[in-house]
Length: 470
Image (tube, rainbow, N blue to C red):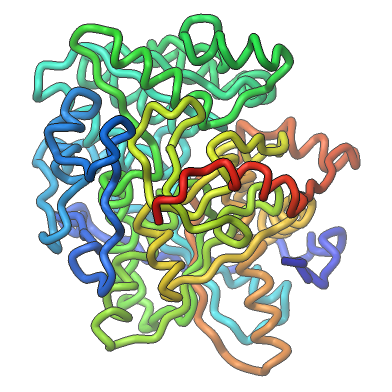
């Protein structure tokens, strides 16, 4: 989708930090339960399929790989709210509730009648929303007596979050970091190592899946699908070890709903309700987190909010992928997931928004998109950095490249409101800051970044290989 940010960022310094209005909750306002949107969905997601038997997954099929509590949450289609353990809420209090901010300066720069709000998840100790799920997943593993956990990470936000959570609960962690991000983002790697995690560039020679990929493609710079394969293989071959995932899965979407549940209360404090809710989209974690609590009011018929997932044009699964069962990883170790996908062997371009370089969307978001209950747009890399620079120069926060997709989509909607003369209320999720991504900004200002387009043939080549289950 073309981005029509019709404003020059070079002239925005006069819009330096204007009045800012934050809506801050008390510790007691941290949600006591996560919201499970599946219970309210008119069409539930199709079941996960066992990769071997090709039968619907049962909880006990997941127990060898995930924590028991996480596995049960994954397949819970009935309980609307699931209690947050006291120890998890205790850890949430380190940084939650996060502030909701009215972006007055950005509104003025755009000369829009729209009211723009953002939920600032960048204030967490690791700078992103990822701790919302890292803490409960690590807690559940520790409670089961697990000693080791494995995971993958793209840009490094998830790896950093799980490294902190693992250290708190006394777990040993191995992180397979997508090789291109391992090289592009050395300080993310340093953060993980500071917390005590072992970080391996993926694909690696430490797993069967990695060795095969490197044999076939020695120069391959990796993908989240590859890193997942390696992390799953290590978990399955290591005693007393579980695999922990940072996005895509239902349990991760569930944990992230603390974002939207808080935002609901804060929008009420502001005396407004969002007409549009926007978040960037890789596998679905932060989009689910802010969107699902508001979506439940659409599902009940009370509201008619639009929900927009903003993904990279170079990895456009929701906008151009097929709705089909596919593996969550490249090697085919994971259950088959009903998802919008570009094919699990799709090789995304090496954009700096490493957390969004994933071939598929989670089952819940994919079903909602299939049913027309949410929308998706794709944003070019250069447009995201243009939007990021404008946001930094007006609101004072340098956003992560991933979050900049949501900012670009927000600016587009705000400019549409200007053209239409309509006073929309827009809420977006600022999923993380970009202070460890400054090499990407250096390249942008040096005109050393490019846009990447995916051809229909490339998508068809990967999706035609999929077993047609849906």
